[in-house]
Structure formats: structure tokens, C-alpha cells
Image 1 (cartoon, rainbow, N blue to C red):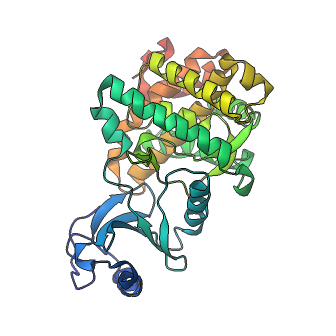
Image 2: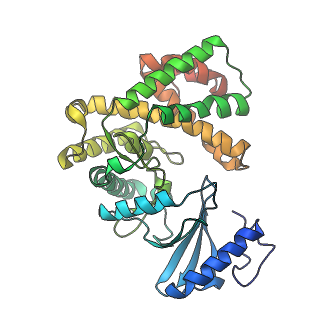
Image 3: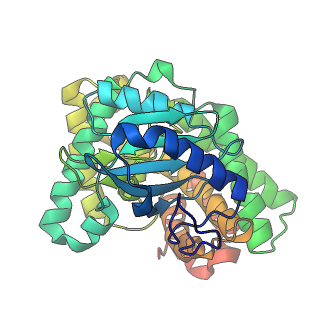
Length: 360
């Protein structure tokens, strides 16, 4: 996010950029209307964070401390799912931002502030024991999410959505990023791989799926964790969010720790009554295999998304983590015979070490 503003004025200090003057004017009018109800001080407005979408977050002071503004410009963004799911999360007894003011037509929300310490930073600094405590809190919250957030209120993670996500990989990562054109053989391998991954995803028991239950979207808070970026939640595979947590975009763990946390999550889900189905509920091996396969679907999708962010959206720093996702994908494709043909598609982008099962 830019930290300069060529149009500084009474509503927003120089720390906040407004490339579109009309957007800035709309914000000033909205803030003038809601600000007095919360004692907001416009001169304290400053960037809080941005994400991979068109949304951004601003922080400002008010009567009760710190507040967050979501700036989500229509038509690119729609704040209504965020408002809906925030209410579901709070009803489930979990910790999410409270929506204090909402203007869905203009895409402005005023939210309670969950603090300044993301899980990602805390995990990197916590040491082994501290990281374990944080991950166990994240797992406990995930089990509560799966048990208490009503999945039937959410759109389905269906075949069409799974296929659209997978299609990002050949378009943005293979063709646009690496300049590779597949022939009939490569396209056939890709189509078979997609079919396997989609069928495996659709065969899983379904729960509410956050879709980005990862350290960057969790905050160290009380109660812990605070949950962010949940507006794209769907009804989908029970292992998806755990795969997102264990094999993250920005921090990786050795497989022994992944397995330890996965076993704990599986046991906690069974004890709590999360709908795992007969197979997953009785066989951790089947649960782990499903987690790895849905993780591969996610990692191929993210490879496409990160390349798109670099090439289309001018956010090159996302490309720095492409090797991490190639590593995840390689490990899983090498482990399962049905998925091993995918290695031939990965190798031109990652080198011959892929064929030996090497991971980054």
C-alpha cells in the first residue's frame, strides 16, 4: 500500500493514498456521518493492511480505542458476505471483528480492531513451544468453526468452483509466467489430475470452510485467535482448512510437526462431533490422504493466483513464495501413484529434482 497522498485534506492525512478522488470524497462523507457515533478522530487515519484483492484496511482512533475501516470498492468487492459471516462467527462463540457500521452500497465497514500481531509474525518469533501453543489454539478454533458455523448457509464448494480454481494454474503459472505451451499429452495429464482432485474433494464430508485458515488471517488476541478474511467461506471438504493451516503460503513446517498437529485436529474433531463420516472418523490415514489431496488442489490454485498477482496486479512480492508451493505440490504428487504423472508438468518449471521427490 502506498504511504503517500497527493490529495491530503481534512478527511485523511498524508499517510493514506486515494488514487481515485471520487472514492476519497465518498469516504470523507461516510466517515463524517458515522464518526460522531464512535468518537472517531479522522486525523489519526493510517494504513493497517492490504490483501490480494481490491480491499484494504485502515486504522483510526476513537472513543473506545482503535477501530478498523474496510475500504472495499464496488463493483470489484461486495461487503455483504463479510457482514453475514461475521455474525455467524460471533454466534458460534469465536472471535471475529464486530461490524459496527456498514454501507454495503459504497463498500465501507467500520470494525472492531483485533490488534496488531498476526499469527504469522508470532509463529516466526515464538520458538518451538510457543508455535505449538499457537497452532493448538488455531486448531481448537477450527474445530469449533466446523462444529458451530452452519455450513448450509454458505455457497457450495462445488465442481464448477474447484475447476475454475484449478484452471488458474495452466493459464497464469504455466503459460503466462513460464511461457510454456502444453501439447496433447500434457493437457491429457492435466485433465486426469484435475478429475482425480475434484472427485476426491467432492467425496469428503462437508463443513463450513473458511478457505484461507492460515496464519496471515489469524491474529494473536484474547480470546485466541482472532479470525480475519472469512468473506469467501463456503460449504466444502472437511480437511480443506486444516491443509491451509499446516501448509501455509508464508511459513512451512517439517512433516513430523504437520502430522502431530493433524492427528490432534483429527482427534479433537472426532471428540467434538464434527461430521467426519465413517471412513475419516475411523481411519486417520484416510483423513491424511484426503488432506494432502485437497492441499494439492489448493497449492495449484495458489500458484496460479500468485502469478496473476505478480503479472496482472503489479504485486511481484507474491512470486517470492512460488518455490514453497512447488515444493508442496511436488511432495504430494511424488507420494501417490495416481498423481505422479503431474511431476512431468511441474518439472519444466522447477527442474529435474522434482522427479526425485525433492521439495524446496
